Image 1 (cartoon, rainbow, N blue to C red):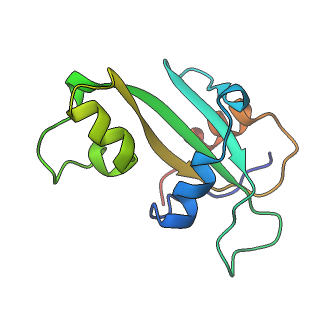
Image 2: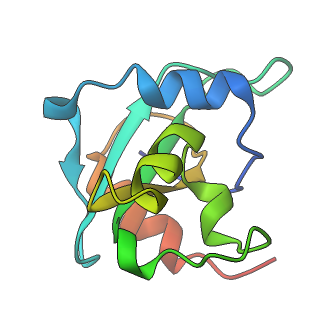
Length: 122
């Protein structure tokens, strides 16, 4: 994935649906990121450049580490269903998301994510 840019779009309903449609066996371990996994999804927001794809990175977060404050940034990256289960003590963990959008698909997902992390901040 020859990546020249990366952004993090808002988690809207369409993005949560795309994430929910990813089967568990499809996730790939992210390079140099303990506990993180990556996956490319087909959802691309309307008006985005052709060839753009979304790479979703998820990181396991133990329920005990989820802040009770509803203003917490981490809480906004966990699906509402998972957040409820974790905060109610039904689940021992949840998955927090971070989105990246690079053009092309000519490298592996872990390599693309590693490259995105090395780009200078705008």
